[in-house]
Amino acid sequence: MYFKSLQILRAIAALSVIFYHIHIYSVLIGNNYENWFKIFKENFAYGALFFFVLSGFLMAYLIDIDYKDFLRLRILRIYPTYIIAVILVIFFKVMIFGSIENEKLYLAITLLPFGELQYPLGIEWTLIYEVFFYLICSLFTTRILKRLYLFFLITWFNIIIVGDFIFHTQTLFKPYISNILFSSFNLLFICGSIAYLIAKKIEKPNKSYDYLGIMIAFSLVFLSNISTATLVKNLMLGTGFSMIIMIAYLRDKYPNKNKKILFIETITSFAETFGDYSYGIYLVHVPIITVIFSVSKNMFNFPINSEICLISLVISLFVGWHYGRMELNIYKKLKMLVKYK
Image 1 (cartoon, rainbow, N blue to C red):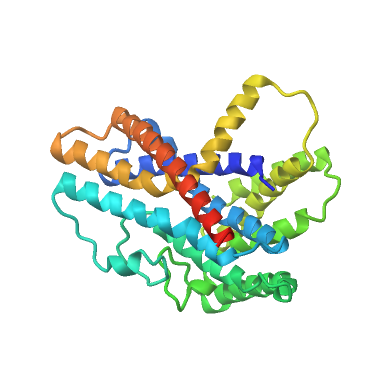
Image 2: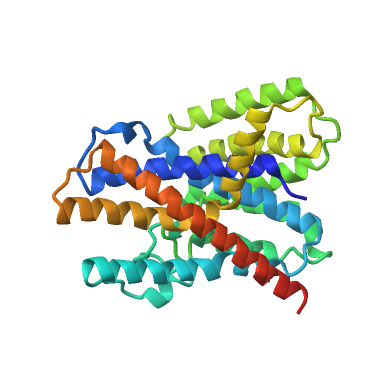
């Protein structure tokens, strides 16, 4: 089943991350706190955490339908175009800046939890958690073990909570093998998976409950900004995002038969395609933004103002769109090879 509404949500999350990165790198590279993108602060970075919840939801769905070649196809989705992006970024940085230092690149591109490494694309910390979660999910793709998936999720959830309150387990952006299992970022995946297991049992969604759920979900996301505890923040975001994803999933499962408006359909169709390409866009947007800012500041002595930020947005979306389309086509071809091997 293809989830149109979830792809639209994926597009919104990807855009929010791009806007946040333009703001944060305009500060880090250009020391400019005053431009059009200054409103896109930390809460827009939650788009990356939304991807964790969405992955949890979709992986639970794949486990539920006995998806064949689960781990092999997940690896093919993540690694080939990631490695291509790394090669392209290093090539263009060498061409522009003359050289590039990247210690232990051979470890970085594994996307395994080796701690404080220098990553070439600047977004790898999320992929490390994604790959780890895929490895966990692969254990439950057999018919025998998949019955234990919910039990495992609840157990894992409690281990993380206990570990945080009793042992004060750290939640690291660049985790090590020894602590990644106990990171509170995993709560986002767990919430997403549990959300699917709940949603699949709902047969007749009620619009009134949908509106109430959306209000509660956005309230949780908003209130998460108040908490300074990472675990509480991730738990609130995981719950809020899960409710939004559940409502979108049920909308796809039980579509509204009302008359469709052409203008709205055009926008949603574009957003859906953007969502399809979002992984490729996500891979390349930070290198594009940082290179544009560095070249503007260091080579041309331009301030990182609103106009430069807007240029970086347009270029990152344009290049990312085409790279995302290429990424999706590569994955589809690799997927066909696996199926007919």
